[in-house]
Length: 146
Image (tube, rainbow, N blue to C red; front, side):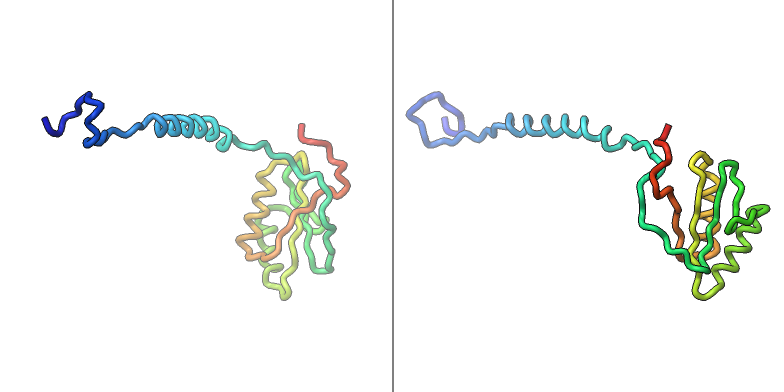
């Protein structure tokens, strides 16, 4: 009977064509378990804390502008109160047209909402401001996030 497997130990002419897949299955299961454990860790969001570390001091050039946003969302242009977002947009357009263009520094209150600060950043972008920065507490005296 040619082509069949015999239990005859003296028959060495035919080779066994079966592949042992057990090690492959073991490796695949280990990889599956690793990915199942690692993916939720990667997807989890990280809690954000406001900066409290010292940064490099800013050089205040005479043309630089500081926009402050207080805890209630009111905006100030170099210590002068702005009545509304339209006034901010008008002043930013004037600043963007100047040569050289001034740097805009944003000071946001730590206990304020993010929305008004985001609105200032968006207004700067729409006006075409090239240099924008945030001012933090250089002493690190701000208390940690609640």
